[in-house]
Image 1 (cartoon, rainbow, N blue to C red):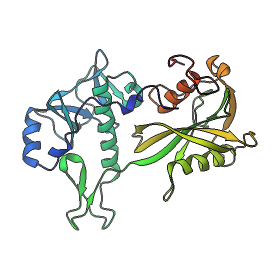
Image 2: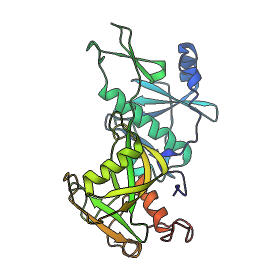
Image 3: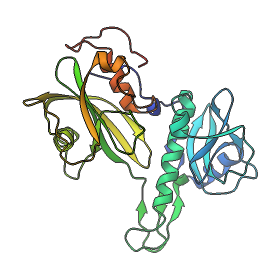
Image 4: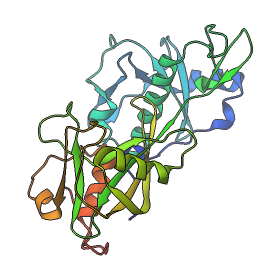
Length: 296
């Protein structure tokens, strides 16, 4: 099963223009004619109506800045600044990622991912000295040992486990709101393929063996630095759910009818989990499309 639509945080509407990151002269000139997306220490950004990012003139803005790319040939930078600037509304990516257009969703996702990485990596992992921004914010360079450090992305798998028929497994973490359920997920370990991670995580979380591990799609999830690799997998053998590692508060088998009837609250549309579940709901037990994507 492939995703019927691009996950909302995977959308792209700008050119990253990475070729310009190595040119301080070009970046300096681009800053003078560009626009800036302010990102606060809490990773909020200014929003205008209708829901769209408020891109400001760069004049007078101070703070660390990262070159995001070109939108309609206009250079766009993310600038770190406090929430003391006037704005119609301040919002974070989780809140507005699903309602922004393609360009703004891509810009804000990239800006938040870079901002979170910079905040967590101010020092050189080799010598411990403070590092400096370089290449338009896409590198941190150590002035002591000249080592370069690049933004980190942690691969994670997220998978809908089904029985080959009309049921799938949904789980709930204790920290989630009451009634909120989602599909299973976990990080890929060193030396492990993503498909192997799917099988391991399902076994560890709910005690099920799986086969037919099938790639569905991917989405960045910068909270703080994940790339979610979506899959479906068919459970085989004993289908009894057993919470083995106690990462979940509960996990249950549910039918399409039960999910459509509102037996549980699904994850929000900003997540790839929402798209994987709704695509599964729109298919019959044989995996054939039973209609267009739903809004469940």
